[in-house]
Length: 484
Image (cartoon, rainbow, N blue to C red; front, side):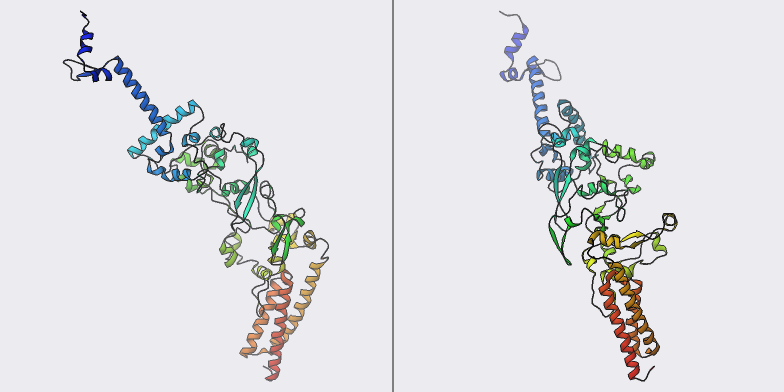
């Protein structure tokens, strides 16, 4: 007969206890305790639970259990990355990255349960995650590619792009990351690029218009349209001009906004004076927010708009007084020449835009010749005059001396109209009808003279013809009525 008490204890235990690895404890508050097998079983269960929770928490379905993640989950679900789990991007590749990511992620449910979470979660994606094997590991070797976007008029535009120089070289003195551009939440894309990110780098702090300094130039991003375009003046083919005429001659107002960073935007994330004082250190700000952290450019910078005509509608249609320093002394400068160019503002003649205006040719295309010497211009500013060379640059030798011919024609016609106007003034008197006719004539003569009729010779000629006609009517009426 065995004298081992443990053997008697095992024989006295119920079968369920033996299966569960439990034993009775006499005279203790806790009447049962695990045996060696019970401890092993508990460890196996805990390990299995941890593995199961790790697997479940790695699935996007777990992420959406927090209501603040629902919008991001929906974006991911309908995006091109819907077959990629969250942790594939938001954890560093490899076992170490997985473990570190899990420990960081443990704080998220705790914050959610305790109500200390923020409504705008900031999730990081490293370049290593994007460029890992099976994802975009060959992206830097692919070379130039074409990215098709829709313009403001919903026309498809092909943008040329190469990842290698943007990630492998410093851009404007800054080291970019994949998420420097691919950091936007875009409907149906989840992580994609908006063209505003491109605009900010290519157009900020450079000159536009006459002395355009767009980084990399227009054609480095998108080539000129192919084939003939139908304009109101006829057919136009960019290929005939692109090698000798700058894009800004016709597309001078393609940029609106300066991409500035209002100081108050810093308060949305920071509230320490010592942090806010660093805003002037541009290099540090970009290293902390762009290189070291994923902060969208639009979170700090005002958006820059780039399209065929980026000017606000108020500028295009209402022509308000200039809001800059010139507007303190000059009210609506150049309004007469602009109206003459557009063929509007005269009396007795229908609107008649010039052929150049209908072809969308900008002012700087013709006004190429500096009026003042550099020394004088440095003090009082520069004015650019229209030149025949500007005509020849676009039209070649088809219209020799056209500018001088137009100017002589306008001058001769204007002199004739002024002569008739003087006669009409002398006999107009106080008769209401004659005064109205005279007012129309004076307006047209003044408009052609101050608006420089050479901007629209056909419209200017028609206006002067109407002025002469009105003056002759005044003279005729005065003769019929016996003078003033």
